[in-house]
Length: 289
Image 1: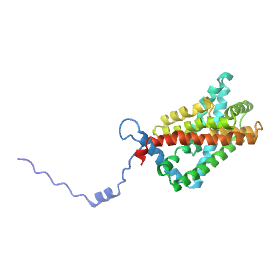
Image 2: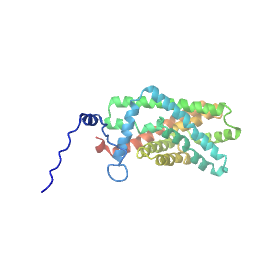
Image 3: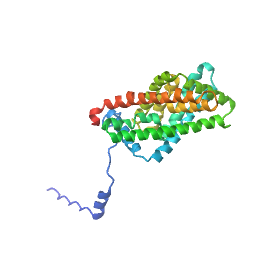
Image 4: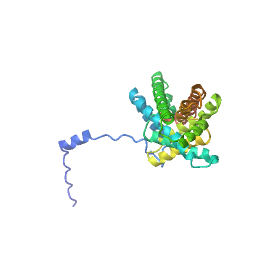
């Protein structure tokens, strides 16, 4: 003869209230739904969600974040110059490439607003919606971040050029690195900057594929070191170098602004938007819709 099961106790009012007010679990798009890695669609969603949040931020918040990025990216310039002091001249380009990622690591891990990262992130929501309001928010973000980045870059360059914060050997090394990083001419700078923009937007895509800090730092280093190694151009890191040359009188402002900065910005936008944002959005268009 089987035992009669005891009746389950009725839930109390406290239990019901706890269930009512319990936080709802949201979908975690940074954890693979299947397999061991995020799919392209999952990375795309990570990028889109973050971009939507950034596009809604107040202009003041974006401006301060962009200013911080422009200042901090200057440490790429310093690190690259410092390492050249320790190697023979023949190995200077390799030393520059090793030190160049430092500022990018600081900026990305601090979650500061860097213009070239935004050739991917806010472009994804626009490609998904393709409406006027999203385009306006995209352009607003670009303008605020670019202006803030350039102001920060100019301040850092002025500190390096016009104050005694660095000694003479470092000043000579900065001069050599700045000349190496800004030469070319309008057309060549655009072409090289396309590759630089490609790599930075790719960095933003890869960083969105993982929460592991060590892996993120590795991705940042792997995508930014080639910019210096292969002579590609980055508009914001390069702006610190260009402003430095102009401030010490080693180059004219017109050459640095019209001959370097403008074409570097154009090339970075082309590389990031076309070669990363559009291609990676294209591969998940059906999922995104």
